[in-house]
Image (cartoon, rainbow, N blue to C red; front, side):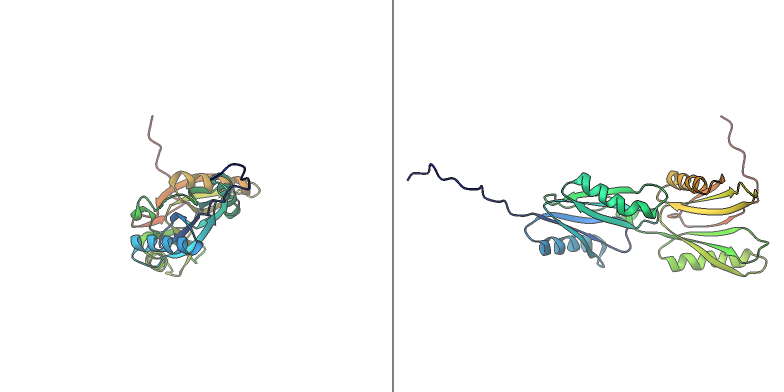
Amino acid sequence: MCRGGQGGAPALLPSRFNAVAWHPDYDDFWAVGGYLSRNAAADAAVALCNQDTGGGCTYAFGAENGAIAVARGWDSALWIDDGPDGGSAKRKALRRCNPNNLLPCEVIGTHGSKSGTRRPKNLVLARRVFGAMAWPRSNGDRRMFLATGHANPDDAASAALDLCTRNSPTGDCGVQMSFTSGYVQAFRSQAAATGELINRAISEVSAKRAEQAAQALCKELKEKCFLQGNYDVRSRGLFVLDFEAPLPAAPKK
């Protein structure tokens, strides 16, 4: 049989699909790749996630012959996008995430259509933990009351409100801020025009980033920044933030 002289275009390789799944109680993602159909990849990603979490996972995103990137914001929210390769997917995910954050977001992972399975390295650290901060409604009491280390936002809010109510002279308090995982940085900013000191708090995914976010906000507001305490939202605790109290002296070097 003669096989020579038979031209024509090379055979096209079949498409490969990957998919990402996530869970509302976790700030990370699960992914699978190498599947021949979008639906098969989506089902496998959800099954992988449910296997680790016990259920409650949903399909988040999928790609064909490309890559997916996931970025995480200050509040542990996940932002996802795809591209023909990992670099372009990262850039697109960051473009979605960055406008909602003071600091540039962190890309926590990329995954290609031909990649294998991907899951969080540490489920305990990936699970979301909540904190909340309450303020007295009385103008005379400028303290903040912080509760951290709770499994859901409602419990965190109740704990912060209870702490404020028990310690405020009037007992009239309201919950003003909620935090998800990460760290809370307390600080004061001083307005250039009036010299007024304003008590503030901000959160980020790490202690260092929380400090940087406070400084970035002061710079944006064109105000001087005075950093106070830094608190781990993942650790259970109750804290009274007294901004008027003198800070402890820095240790001698």
